[in-house]
Length: 294
Ligand SMILES: Nc1ncnc2c1ncn2[C@@H]1O[C@H](COP(=O)(O)OP(=O)(O)OP(=O)(O)O)[C@@H](O)[C@H]1O
Ligand SMILES: [Mg+2]
Image (cartoon, rainbow, N blue to C red; front, side):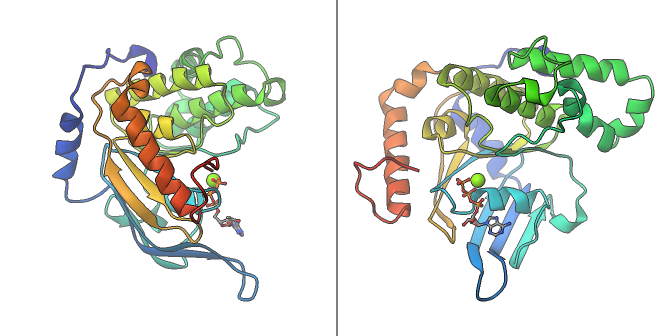
């Protein structure tokens, strides 16, 4: 679990990339995927012929203008929606098979209001095997310790017994993250998980997320509007065009691990952010550089 993780070693970025490049079966593959919502005459084309491969153990950050289809990609990979055209393959199987352990943190934290924070966080353990059978037996106490451990990691020590409506928006986002991590998923889908947090808490959580990823190497797909966040966490960044979205830029992030906040102010890091920013300005339809990104 996060608390028991060994301190992360200083790894040159290349060490993180090379083993991934040699893999033959990608963890996730979207092949010519289109998604159209609604009926003819009143339809929205969210994605158009999108191709995307994510290799096992990669941390892919997906950025792009608002409404370009980022959450739609996450929902496709999670099996929550089906493509209108094309295929979505996870670990060599079509998503409809739904055999993988996926952790998801949605854009809006969806906690059940009648359950406490602890009960909400432990919910995946009651649903996902093999935890489900263990939950009824001897492991309940250990699972509770794990939930408390995660809550402490994200600065919510002492809030386990509260109800969701007793927490602020930022606190709910942190609890949401704990719920996505509790069953140690091999694949993590994160939809702007730090969006409602203040800058300092957000940066703290980047460090926790990086540590968790270095220790367990899950495959992560992170959607974010924060370009610093994408470059701090990602092994690779994909930029999407405006709706209907497709990937218009796909590049590895070359910085060594563990990355630090100080590194985000260094010239190479700032240059990467500027490049991403101009790609998004272009993707939004050529708005002037003086306009704010998404
Ligand atoms: N269930 C739905 N029914 C109809 N249209 C939808 C549905 N879900 C998404 N859309 C539309 O599809 C497009 C892409 O939506 P999506 O939520 O994937 O965007 P996004 O890139 O995540 O945006 P944001 O950055 O604002 O979260 C949008 O135009 C949205 O209105
Ligand atoms: Mg979204």
